[in-house]
Length: 528
Ligand SMILES: NC(=O)c1ccc[n+]([C@@H]2O[C@H](COP(=O)([O-])OP(=O)(O)OC[C@H]3O[C@@H](n4cnc5c(N)ncnc54)[C@H](O)[C@@H]3O)[C@@H](O)[C@H]2O)c1
Ligand SMILES: O=C(O)[C@H](O)COP(=O)(O)O
Image 1: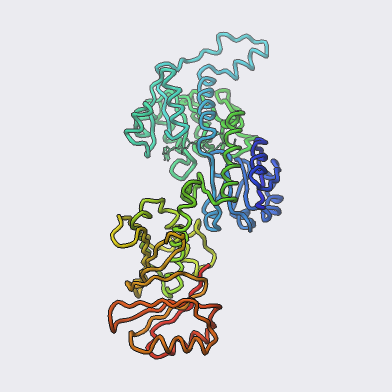
Image 2: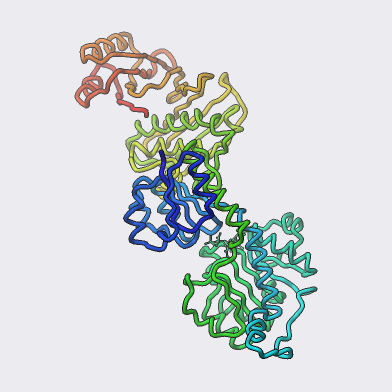
């Protein structure tokens, strides 16, 4: 039974779902904050469910010897070292929509709190000061809201702000004009947003391009008296520059749910009266926490129990419906890759994968990942479907994928070509109705070979007597032939034999085969 650790506070729904799905679960909501303890226990688990408190560092991943999946009950995954997880073949998934409405609502609440200085007015009233003249606010109606990031949350914020009769301008390099129109915002460049916005709200991930997107230089370009809301990530604003801008009045107020260092316990911004703070509460509503807990537990369970992949950030999704249909083709792609990988002895420059017929209309990305895994595994060992595409990229291997309609006799056809410095080797296959992969072409030579776990691949000159000599030698070596497949392009050209054998060949036995008259190459192949 797979075992999952929940190391941050999650709704009890998650624990129940794991149990209902046949997954053993340890719910230790404070463990994520204790790095040493996490390091000690992580090796026991197949799955890890987290929020933002658990930091899944490279060190934790290195210690996670059994870990297959990390599920983030929420959106931001900047607390997970995804490249390290990918290299280790660990799927990282999140729940991209479960808390979007809640977070957008928090941003709107923060905007109103800023516009009317609600926290300060509340504190003053409780202190019996009744400072009616001190708290002069501003209306939001007809004001301009600048959205930095118009994805899931940004577009909900836009919708609510439009409902409040605000004008919304958005800076988001990936926002298409059609989508901007659909969500009712005006797409602008950052400088224009800075110059026009009365309120600015941030809704981007924390990545290199967005780190400190509001800094001394950009803050100086804002309207004097702008109000800033950040319910995304702390690192998006240079906090020292914001402090100065709040002091000088360039920025009239800032409402911050997120901070560079969290938990934020001693931040200089806390001294300023025109700053409103909440402790990373953006996603904290009953509804959002139910949503994300339920989703993450279902997603992790599905992956561990059936291989279904949803909302993975480092692997293409495979739905429950397509999983059974894709599985034999994923297997075929891996086998073709493995075949080519086992025959390849020099550095690979490129891998081409062609999909033809019905298979071309399926979700080809997992098949590509499987093919790359197949090619790379014989050379590297420590590789899997998740890490293979990244490893290929890191090694400068070009990957070309093409799809086309059926052209030959086979309804489904995948051809994989590996180009090395010395040669190009293509292997093609299909899946028959029984779901079993078949090799149908090797180096342009047609055949129809069923794959077995142990095979002998021989290239030879097409001359009489070869089959007899090979059969006799295998018999002498005590190697039983289960299946013998032959092919050649034309009379007298090179021929190949793909022989299924019982047991495995030793190096010495292989040497005797290579030494046979007419043999050009002989290789023992193994398939899982
Ligand atoms: N405070 C909280 O509790 C809380 C809750 C949920 C999400 N979040 C954070 O909110 C952020 C947004 O979440 P989302 O679900 O809307 O994500 P999303 O992926 O749907 O949207 C992000 C948007 O940012 C845009 N973007 C990327 N690079 C950009 C750049 N350089 N400049 C401007 N825009 C850029 C993307 O095109 C995308 O449209 C994430 O950082 C997430 O972690 C915080
Ligand atoms: O990215 C998110 O989903 C939010 O930052 C929520 O974080 P939390 O789950 O720690 O509240």
